[in-house]
Length: 321
Ligand code: TXA
Ligand code: MG
Image 1: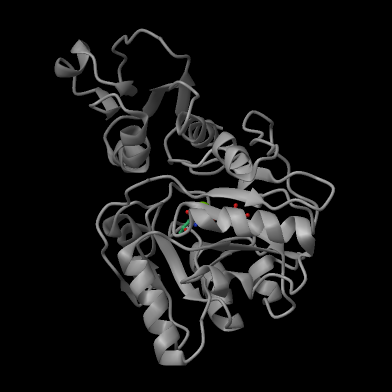
Image 2: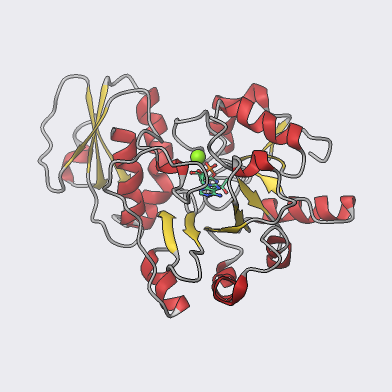
């Protein structure tokens, strides 16, 4: 990887398509491999919080520095922090914007890779890694998912097993001295957790808003384009409690298994144990399996929007749009 090649990298959230974040050619090849538009910036992955800090502006000011110091305690973990970038961050990484996104993944393989690159190179090497799927398709949560979509575009895939969280990291913009921090993408860590930790209000994710392309240099997360995470087959999202009726060519997926599941192969579940955490961990694998199945359409029943259910519903709305 130090020579600029791309690899498939396991993290606790989803697999990343990883390349050197300080090498413009490697970064360009990430965009090319995914078919990702150049206005959509990348997250830099680092081994520890002091490495993260050096990619942020030298002087963050007291308010942002304090928020960063508190929120970095979630690391390693499924949280991405966005703040004013250091001038050394490549424009290709930030899509020309003035902020940079940073995260320390909580996965032994990812951490070992980041530390080994640092050891071999003598100084920390930031790793740019978007989810390792073709642009707009469902994110990968196993090494096989990466191989299916991008197998011929990476030099190697590190198999770290199925991802524990299964949904992308929560993205938080640190805000400005005059405005609160804001969640730009929901994830396992929710706005309430963050507000408790910070001891100040945090603006929650705007899950229900139809989303528009961000102005250059604004903080809207471009991942908030409405269409995203989409299977090729049409997906319909049904209200909680919708009865199951068998329909020709239609696959139905519920969150919790009920008695009907034993009777029909066309009735699946995201979580046999009924837990939202399990549903999150299985979500993308089940969507990919549904896409590869013989059914023509997919109907999914909504889950309760609490805890990680907020992030699950965010992803499902996008996959259905
Ligand atoms: O869990 C994750 O975050 C995974 C793993 C591999 O770490 N990565 C991931 O990357 O989900 P990606 O590129 O698929 O999604 C990153 C999101 C995109 O929606 C991007 O627009 C947004 O982060 N983003 C990155 N830098 C940003 C910035 N400076 N300002 C606003 N949004 C940013
Ligand atoms: Mg992605």
